[in-house]
Length: 148
Image (cartoon, rainbow, N blue to C red; front, side, top):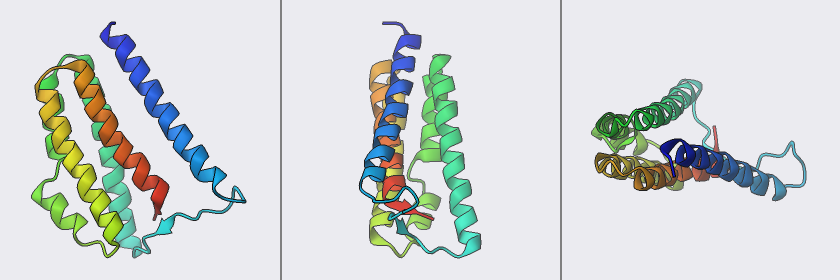
């Protein structure tokens, strides 16, 4: 199977997984206007900072996929490590959150970024996509549980 075929299937899996998670979340509620996810009750400045971080994470995933498409696994690994991994800065940021479950999910996300970086170093496309799926699964799980 070609890289493009694998990448297409992976992206469809991600989109399908996010859709299924969203549908599952919606089915648990009586009204489409009800959002029973847990609010983090962040002050406006911290909320904007957190949202910017998450947008940066999504962009990092986009750049990782682009690097894999160019067979640049070292570059993809560097992005995963520096922008998704559990850097000291990210560890400190996660530990500032009062909600224990959110804090643990954030740390688990960044740890999955470190594992993704290690897997990308191997240059194995299938294992790399599986590791990326684990990292994206962390995103979907957290967004299904919490809201800003």
